[in-house]
Amino acid sequence: MNTADLGLPEEEGREALPQKDGGGRRVGVPSTALFTDQYELTMLQAALAAGTAERRSVFEVFTRRLPEGRRYGVVAGTGRVLDAVENFRFDEDVLGFLRERGIVDEPTLEWLASYRFGGDIWGYPEGEAYFPGSPVLRVEGSFAECVLLETVILSILNHDSAIAAAASRMASAAGDRPLIEMGARRTHELAAVAASRAAYIGGFTTTSDLAAGFRYGIPTVGTSAHAFTLLHDHERDAFRAQVDSLGRGTTLLVDTYDVAEAVRTAVEVAGTGLGAVRIDSGDLLLVAHRVRQQLDELGATGTKIVVTSDLDEYAIASLAAAPVDAYGVGTQLVTGSGHPTCSMVYKLVARAESADPKAPLEPVAKKSTGGKTSIGGRKWAARRLDEQGVAEAEVIGVGPVPGELADQQLLVQLVKGGQVLSREPLDVVRDRHAAARARLPLSATQLSRGEPVLPTEYV
Image (cartoon, rainbow, N blue to C red; front, top):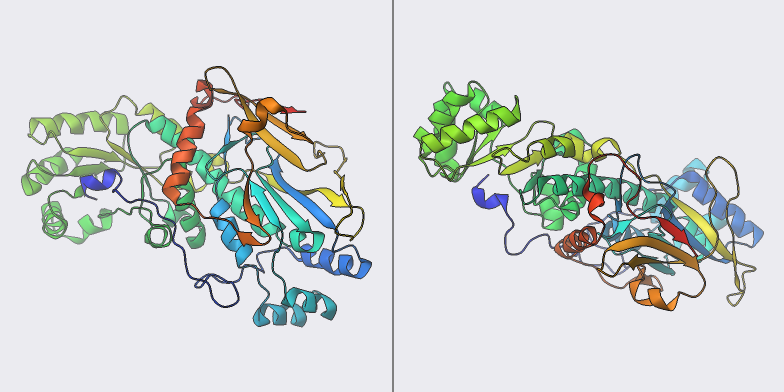
């Protein structure tokens, strides 16, 4: 990695926009129709037979609680949700699979063959913070077209929001020091790409995953692992080969054998203009101080220090006083730093009295015990600010929005009549999250366990 890679290039994180084919599907993106649970299709079949499938319905995505100890959540994955909805198509192969397994009957298969989501979707802007009860996504249309989207929407939002929340906490702990996402080897290959995107939203600056760089325009970095040093007869030979190939601005890995000897050799090979050294083991606080002192004594005062080795937000915070210039994070990031899901749910909150398009909506809600109750009705959400512009409450309601909250509403329309209204570059989403986090009370960035930093008020 060159030292320039520790920051961001002028054009970063641009969302790729594949072309569409004649059927409206984005080219290069496979059908998402089977990213679903079977009961969604069997519910559809029964509703079609009962004549209730076309009732207008409103579904909302929310979580009843944040992961234990977390102060705020981060909405991430919205852009991927829009892709998934656009590509939710039942082609011949998919229909053939459903027919062969006898999952649904022929009338339902005929209905699925022409499925296109034609409703509306509203949601919190991607990168925004959320709290318990926040309606982070609202899906409106017929019951039939909305119910099919439950699993794919939840699988994306639960995963990406968990990763983004962990990334945000790590970014807060890192301060101005860059963060490198390097967790591809610690998760599913497709989850790795989504995790890299979510980490970038949360505040990471680069990724080691080339698929994420290709798909989303995230800046990529990478130089060498211990295997490269072990390949050569001597550490000096490995360093010379890397510098000859990648230049003096590269990052040399110095903890394969003896760190002090490696640092001395690295400067002898690359000169005092060596870009950086990476430390991947040991007492990082102690080793970083020793390496910094040694580099300075050797005249390599501009050489950066990058640390890796199973870092999480707590380890990063513990290194705040260390002479470290960048952090590489893998396992803890892609697993949500102990919380790999946000426990979001997709619930029906309103439905029409009949299939008549003009029939009024009625609030509906689950009323069971055990902490799984829901609040019915099509909701709005706003974040009330104090006189200094700092958020003080998440306000959620059904019906008219109070005048004093009219300019602080959170939901924006994402899809209208089945058409995606816009897509945002990742750098816009990333900047939005940084701004949203800055508007929260200072205690939001504390790593100590606590309750959500904002109360949720229902009106």
